[in-house]
Image (cartoon, rainbow, N blue to C red; front, side):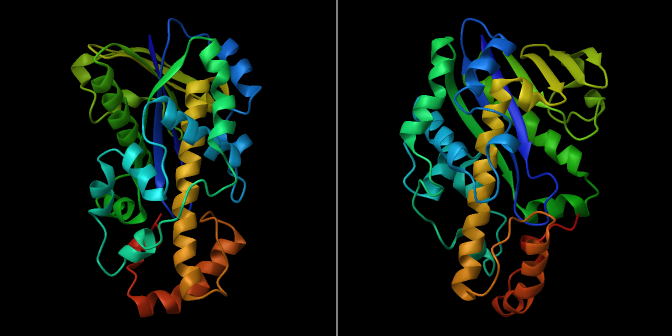
Length: 305
């Protein structure tokens, strides 16, 4: 069977991307409780428990090992990583970038590992999955920068609908890659419960609602398999935890790259996480004159909501 974990990182920050990630596992069976207990013993868990701003070694180690496990080249630099995992590749990621702003996000590509992680440590983290007969086969992410998000906000699209759209694209990508039935396990998208009313890529005529409750929603999709949304899915399901940790790492690298760019222009600027915190607020205010001088587009820098 093919079990897909899908989760998002960065729904609420001021700066940086919204990242949705999917990790596909193949095995003869999947037992959520048994898999969770085995994986948690080596550090695979909800990314809120395993990583934070400035503390990303476990997420980095896991990501490198997952890429090796699925047959992708081990990335030497950040762009190598994005080329391997981004839906549409680097060209699609760079396409929305205004020329004057591009350096903010793409000007400094640094070597990996960059956060204290290692491939060897990641291999150890994945050993319990191998013992349970679960093999990673695909890792993909949809990275939505502030410019892309703000353009959607201008059209009246909500953050939840944007996030669900990314989830759907990742689910369909995994299904195309396998050509067989998949079981998609997803984190809940905000307070959304009636997903059938918001699907944009899964066709209504193919969907059968099996449950829409407070803590989970379950859909059977003809020709694809089943799609489940669940509260605390990243803590309950190892495939979702894997996606959560990879997405956390990707978002952290994006912010690190942006921070390096601004530090190269003005070393006195603070290094923000991008979330709604005092350091980020100080950075936004202190960097404003520099951004004006460098013609950094406001829509590329900060989300409007």
